[in-house]
Image (tube, rainbow, N blue to C red; front, side, top):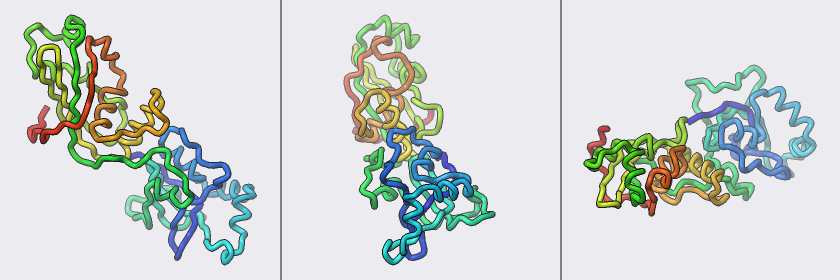
Length: 277
């Protein structure tokens, strides 16, 4: 998963970084594209320690907080070296000091790792993307499709009138089933199957989900920009797979391919162990 190294102001407890701090009066910039740079900025962090220090000194709210009596305040604060991930997770690597690089070394190990909801929970702030409702592993989505225009279907998928199920499955990839993003989004395609019954087609897409949080977030962000509800996240692994390879991709509309998508759901059978393509 992509990440960026930076410096963030942390609230400390018992000598270790426990909570992130930012000016809650300004709130978080929800709606941004979830990339590490944006999370770091929203966490009131930066990659330049000297500049961040100057900005904090000029911020009256931060200045007031840092100069409060720690007994009254109940907490201490420090600027920490941190790594912020594409899904909003944050790992801390000790206090920042002049002369220490912002880049986290390959042999350094984090003091603590916080998922985005753990970062925001103490402030009663709802994360922009709810946690995924599915786990890592091999999952299969089953899609019911009707061929509405047989001639258009045959032409677009370059099929002869004597096609069989395997031929259809091979022709679906890249013409109907295609990743919605070129970058890593936490899942990879394992197998496509098709079963024809007259004008009805049952398509199964098997994918390996390696990073549920990243897949959940990337699908949700793209779907919301396509008109889905502002709080949409995939309800199941099958929903995430459908959106990632059919619902949100750049292939033509199903209607332009002579097809109608009726429904999609979790495939109930155990995926095949022979996943060679």
